[in-house]
Amino acid sequence: MSAPDSITVDEGHYIKNVAANRSKAVRDLVSDRKVLLTGTPLLNRPPELWALIKCVDEQLAGGFEGFVKAYTVDGKSAKNIDELRETLKTVMFRRTKAQVVKELPPINRIIREYELTPTAKSIYNKALEGLWMELDDWDGNTSNAVSINGILAQILKLQRICAQ
Picture 1 (cartoon, one colour):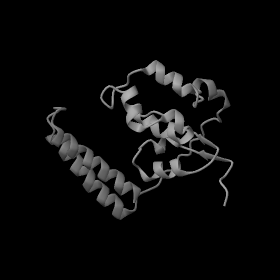
Picture 2 (cartoon, helix red, strand yellow):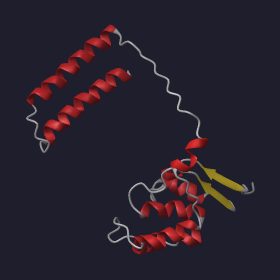
Picture 3 (cartoon, one colour):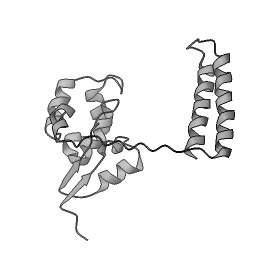
Picture 4 (spheres, helix red, strand yellow):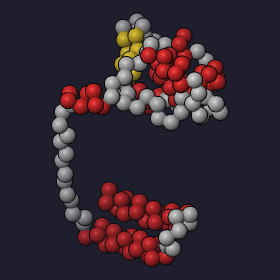
C-alpha cells in the first residue's frame, strides 16, 4: 500500500502532548503533505507547539529538547517569541475570528427542556439539600479549599443526576 498524497488532521491541537499515543500515531503517518487544522494551536506553553510543527515539518521542528531550550526559560515561560513567530510563519496560516466571522454561519441554538422522572427529582432534591447545607456551612473564605471542593462536588452531583 502506498502512502497517501496528503493527510489532513482536524482538531490538530489534540496532538500537542509529545508522549501521547495519539501524537505519536499522527507523527508516524507518512505523506508528502500534512495539514493540521486547529483554532487553538498553542494552549499553554511553547513546547506544545513542537508536536504540531514536527508533524508538518520534521526539519523545522528539530529535536524536542532543543526546541524547548530555544523557546522557553524553564520549559514553561516563553522566550525568543519574535524568532518563534518567524519560524511559525513558514508552517502556519493564521486567521482571527474577526477575519472569518462574516464567513461563519449564524449560530443556531437548539434548546430542549426535559422533565426529571419522579425518582430522579427525589434524588436531585436530596442532592440540592446537600448543596444548601454546604453553602450554609461555608464561611465565605475563598481560601478554604475543603469547603469550596465540597460545594463543587455537590454541584457535580446535581449535573450527574440530570445527565442520567
